[in-house]
Length: 219
Image 1 (cartoon, rainbow, N blue to C red):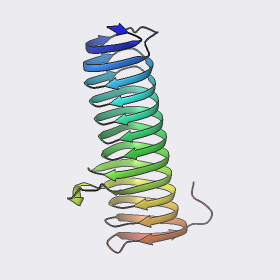
Image 2 (image 1 turned 135 degrees about the vertical axis):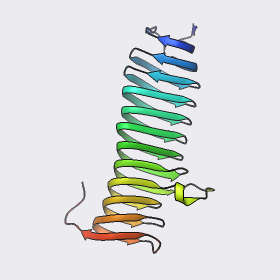
Image 3 (image 1 turned 135 degrees about the horizontal axis):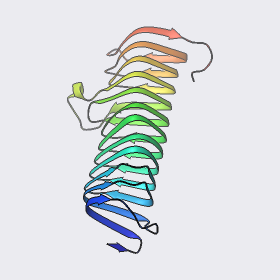
C-alpha cells in the first residue's frame, strides 16, 4: 500500500519500487532484491537488503541486514543492524551493530555492543553494555567507558587488535596496539603496546606491557 509517498511492507520479496516513494516501513519479514534509495527507512520487523542502500535517515527497531554497500546520513539503531560496507554521518546505536568489512562515519555513539573488521570515524563514544570486538578502530577522538547502571564488567569489554587516534580515553579495553597523541588508559584495560607522542596516563588497575614515545603526530 502506498499513500503520500509512504510504503508499508509486511512480507515477501521486493523486486521493484515506486520511484516516487520517499519512506519505506518494514513491519514483517521482507527481502529487498534491488537497490533502495529513499529518504526514510524504518525497520520494525526484519529487513534484508541484497542491493545497495542509500537513505537519509535509517531507524531500526528490529533486524536490518545490508548485504552490499550503504550510504546513510543519520542512523538510529535500537535493534540488530548488520552491514557490509557503510558510509554514514551520525550513528546512534543502543542495540547491536555489526560491521562485516568497513564503516566510515563522522560521529559514532554506542550505548550497547558492536563488532566489526574496521571502523573509521571522527569521534567515537562507547558506553559498553555488552562484549564488543573490533579488529581496527581509527578516530580523532575515542572514549570507551562502562555504561551506567551495569555490572559484571568481565563481559562488558572492548577487544581490539589496533586503536589509532589523537585523543584516546580507554576503559575496559583489551588491545594489542594503542597509538595516539594524548592517551589515557583508564581502569580495566590490558594493553600490549602503547605508542604516544605527547603524554599518557595509566590507571593502577590496568596493565600496559610496552610504552613507546614516538616523534611527530599520529596519523
